[in-house]
Length: 138
Image (tube, rainbow, N blue to C red; front, side, top):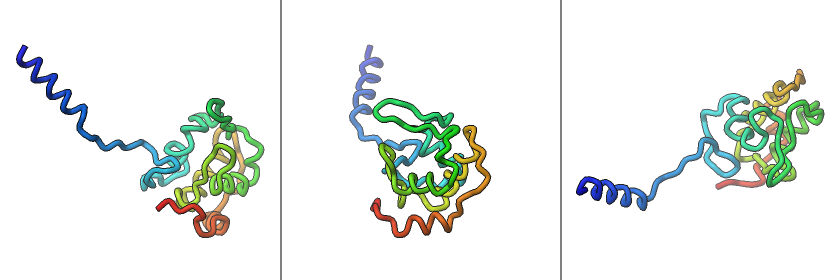
């Protein structure tokens, strides 16, 4: 019985101590994750939560458009603009993701989920589109 009381006391104490929480991905307000070195990694850690692992989007608190087979992705400028500036329920990522991460994720989405667009967007094009980050995070 004494061991049970000691164990319960320790568990009670641990439950009130502050614990640092860390999400798997940065989202729109977290730290930039340096391990997002590819478009697939950026999609998994940032985009997948809303657009789903299969890119088919969803309906819930907001309508999240499907990226799978989406004809609006025919030009890389459209998805890059949406990622940079946000649109509807989607937040902006200008200043949150690097131009390289934005170019990589746009190129990834345009070649996956049933999309087979061949042309790509370059980092220099994303930089020119972004200009100075309009929404500083710090």
